[in-house]
Image 1 (tube, one colour):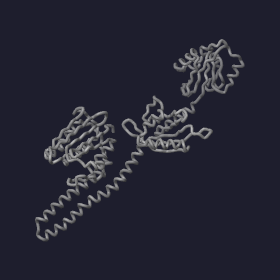
Image 2 (cartoon, rainbow, N blue to C red):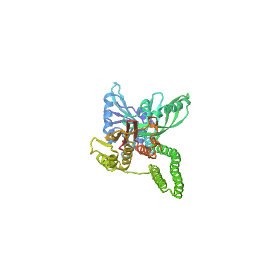
Image 3 (cartoon, helix red, strand yellow):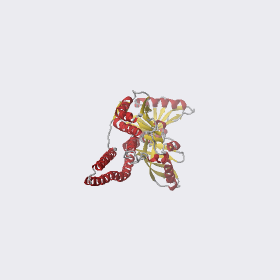
Image 4 (cartoon, rainbow, N blue to C red):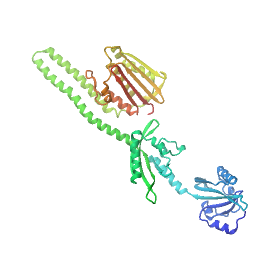
Length: 473
């Protein structure tokens, strides 16, 4: 249907980029804003749209054909188009049908909006947020919908192709110990209409993240909160360093007191024995003086062991060990080479199971694994029961990128009411056995550094340690 001059002039003056086409996509009307937006210098009246813009993508042509056939309006809030000079133009567009006097579709009208500056600014913001690991979000209280930036999908355990999660789904990823405070803080922000800031843990596959979230309520003209918006940032590295520092400071207080006590006690005893030895020598009691010297030798040995343990503890956080491949059979053979004489001396039967098989290879800091296994087996030897045939059963199993270690023995065990203290510094339950009370503490520290887990089950019939170590460092 031909368009009269009055309509043509009206469309020409419309202050937005708009164009009308016949069914063959030939131009029949357009605004000056259309020419300006696409940098067109001459009249395009009667020309075919695909000739004016030969770079129109095939998917757009398919949309044009679909609207002509169905009459259903199509739109896109953010798309992009390559101009003749190869620059990108970000668009918001609507493709609509127009109808002739008989009510049939006579052609199409295109309404477009240049959103390049907004989209470029948004993408730059997203890139800066990506560098800072900072995501932005908004939650609409009416629709219960969450809007997320791309960085949020990297912080939380969600797949970007599935879109932002529901509020309940998002809530389920919060660490159970932090969930109550998360709900309370969020609820008070709405109730009191005030901004908030909080730090909480998030459950992600194979690890836990620390997230710092800041939010503010958005109000309507009536002063009612209609949405909450804000930012979230992965602060795991910072929080882990803070927790480590707090732990070190607390342990240092205990360590300083107990280490000074354990170092001072044998020195005081040696000092007393020296006085006794002098007296025995002056009295001519050579045999008694030799006994005193022997006691001093034992105390000095004990003192040297305490000093060695103290040095080991002081280095446990700084000690670096590079993960290297090693077969389970090699781990077993190294243990036998080191501990077999002790097994024979104590008449202790040692069994070692390797799963799925002995050729299974793991990548792990070998010296740290060796330290853990040797210390645990040394305890099985040291605390074996004198009234029964002793055994120690070790199982090393690789399953789902984790090393599972189970060590069982039938030794004297640990008192049940004190087992919650078993991994604390300077904890000793068997005072008639030598030891500094630092061995299990150091083992626990190393396993914690790997984000692993160690559990204990003990009774007078024996002890079982269950350890899980992730094989991803």
